[in-house]
Amino acid sequence: MSRQMGDSQRRFLQTMMACGIVDEPGARRLYQYCCETHNTQQAPDQLDDFIDTINSKLQPLFMQIRKGISEDSGHQYYALVNMAVTDVTRMSSDYADNELELFVKTMDLIVGSDNGSASSTDILNSADTLTSKKLKKSETEHLLNRLVHDKWLNEKRGEYTLSTRCIIEMEPYIRTMYQDQVKVCHICHNIAIQCQICENPTCGIKIHNPCVARYFKGRPEPRCPACEDFWPHEIPEVRRPLSQSRR
Image 1 (cartoon, rainbow, N blue to C red):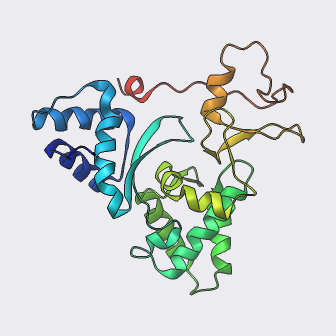
Image 2: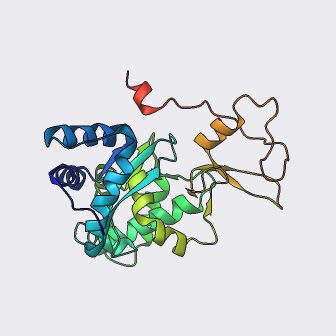
């Protein structure tokens, strides 16, 4: 029998509905706050059990609080996702048809790239190929800003990547539509879009940059964990946990 959802879980869910996605330290702070506010017993290692109780009540509504990682930092996040629809039509209430078409083209550019990103120039050029109503340059730029604000895309120095929220929520769509292009990270086994790739043509495994940093830290010579060929890519620095980086 599933456990009943109490006031602490309801408050947690209300906050997730407002935020959409929170990092793991933020989720733990929210968990503690909700339990203290409603005098509910809580333990630091019971966050996932707490969320499982919420998810058991969300299941008939085809929603779920799902855990995922940031491809950029490797940090854990929790996102409230819609399980009823597995493609971009879930965004149709917020975006027009031509805007959704450009978002799909942007995903195509990002997933099909070598580094998991697409430049603003390439996205602006793809706007000229829309089969639906064309978007002006200013309209495309405004749309990209909206997609970043709504946490579907990330932007850094004119380069756009899929956000953590997008990957968590769109995972079934990404796996189906890009099954020949998308692999999972050899280390963490999550979808790998921003990643490094083994250059051995018979291997070709993908590893997220944060996973690369952690796996090769302290190793005298970086070698592929699958085929043992020399790993020719630059090894990034290990990113500190969010709880430490904010001190």
